[in-house]
Length: 110
Image (cartoon, rainbow, N blue to C red; front, top):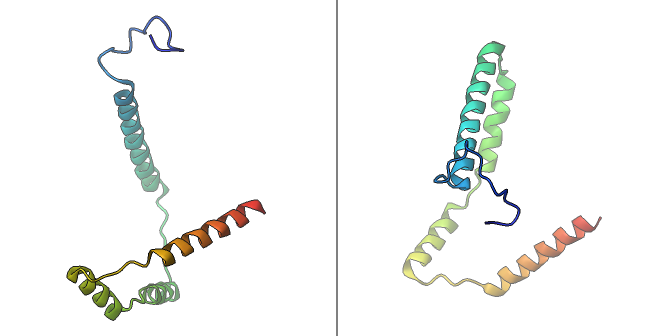
C-alpha cells in the first residue's frame, strides 16, 4: 500500500491501468474536445476579416528584415565542422553564460 492511498480502490478504476495511462487518456480527450470546441466557435462566429495592403506590405518587410543571415559565415562554419577543424571557445561560452545568468538575477532582484 502506498502512503496516502485509500485502502479500497473504487470499482470504476481498473487495477490493470496505470495512473499515468489514465492521465494520458484524459489529456488526449481534453485536447480533442478543446480542438473541436475551437473549430465550432470559429464556424459559429462567421466574422469576415480583411487585411489591408499596408498591413500585408509591413508583414513582408518584417519577414525580409528578420531573415538577415550571413550565408558565407554559415557555409564556412559548416565546412569546418565537416572537416573536423571547428574549435569551440569554451571560455567565451562560459563568460557569456555567466553574464546572462547575472543579468537574469539582477532583473529578478528588482
